[in-house]
Image (cartoon, rainbow, N blue to C red; front, top):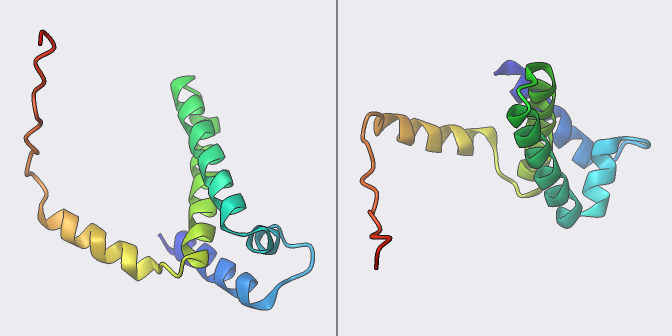
Length: 107
């Protein structure tokens, strides 16, 4: 997970330093709508790659999705620690199977 932390820190630095020719800076300049569009595109591409059973392509799309999600996080001032705190709380609930509401399809 050090790679994710390093990428997050690099993205944060790019937001603050506005580096010429940086794709990350371009995303920040375009704003949240562009960033969210890329998150959606990468998510869809990941799903399609997984559906096609192409592991190498799926891994690449996962990396693209993580990167664009990190850009969104920086844009929205969401830290790695914010995410870790929620994951920690969820881990405490591990093993608790949710009860799903059953729908009577005959009515």
